[in-house]
Image (cartoon, rainbow, N blue to C red; front, side):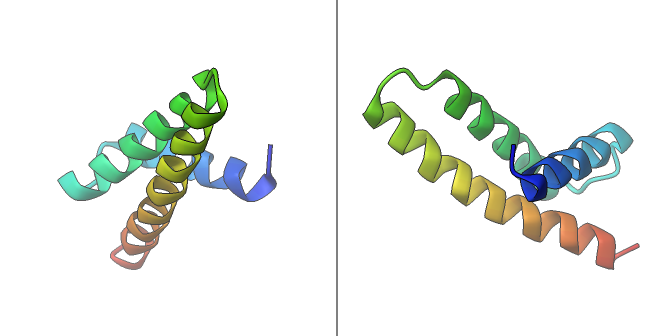
Length: 73
């Protein structure tokens, strides 16, 4: 696994576990985890392509949410 992705997933898990996220940040983190699940379970090329784009978008939104969370602390 890519190191940056592993770090992001760890941060997301910690943020979710603390339960102190705003609703939008919570949804962004859950979307990232859902996208990773889609990637892990893709069974054909088209499903993998769609899951990849979903994961990229979710990762971008989640990075923003985590950075905003850090800046507000």
